[in-house]
Structures are given as C-alpha cells and as structure tokens.
Length: 70
Image 1 (cartoon, rainbow, N blue to C red):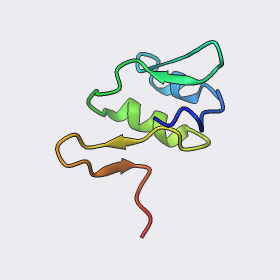
Image 2: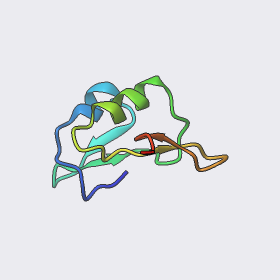
Image 3: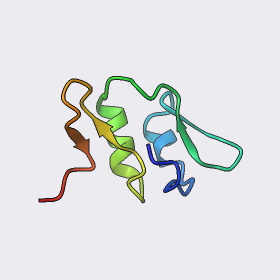
Image 4: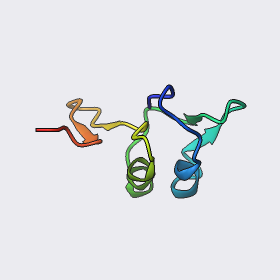
C-alpha cells in the first residue's frame, strides 16, 4: 500500500472492512499487510480511486493489482 497516494475515500473499508482502517490523518492502513488476497481485498484495490493498494503474490512478487502496463 502506498499511503502517500491515499486520499481517504474509504472505499477500501467498504469492500474489505476487516482489512483496512483509516488513521487520524484519514489515510488507509492495511491491518495485516502480508495477508492472502481474497475477493474482498481485490475489490478494495480495484475501487481505490488513486490505486494506492498494491497486491502482489508472495511466492513470486508478481503484481496482481494494479496490473502491469505493457
């Protein structure tokens, strides 16, 4: 997660309430940064208006979201 990009929209909380919280500066923070990506976390990442949520595969480091540009 790139917290410097976060604008505090709260979309991540809506889609994955157990995965994120907003701090006092209204920036999102992952509750468990090294968790398995499930459908709710992917929806949270896709809904982020500034693509601040990055999901990678732990085994390979391959980007799941945002997709790599070709």
